[in-house]
Image (cartoon, rainbow, N blue to C red; front, side):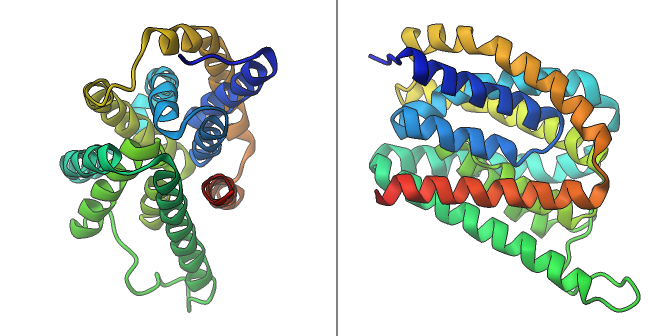
Length: 258
């Protein structure tokens, strides 16, 4: 039975607000909220609980930013997500909560490290040239790799934000194109994940009742996030995304080892 006291509910409501903000501004903040849910709830149940809040935010974000989405990128990313989801589903069936949390934290650290490395290489570039190995919107294999990784991490812990952030920053997506493309990507992926979560026995009536009380906080967060995005320049947006992903990885790792 999934039950929380008043203070735990207030904490989850604050995290739901962060989810809303992340969906219309800094995507990496969603991973922070996911980490917080995993602290209050069992790791596997938390993935199902967060999933429906994420879908709520996705719907709002798609409605706001749908016109700016890059469908050329999405067509390369989406087909490779399903294998990642399948791998993640099998992984969840056979590992403990502790192993699950540590693995997701490790994947976030790797993604953050790659993001920082990319930024450092760019800062040392000559004449604004792109660093060697930087993926372009036309490159197919980086998109396939990002899709599989996103499918896996989103299935096991709703933590694909860092992976997608890496890819969208690497292909030089500006902040609006970044948010719009991510909105459609995660809406389609998260809806696809629902039957997998049900099949794993992670969706219960009491979970849905709890989530119904948290949805208003998500909606308020999407309103705040849209206004927040307008205040950020591209450079601050990129580093804020990286920093939020790094903090999420630290929180998850601490939960896994303590």
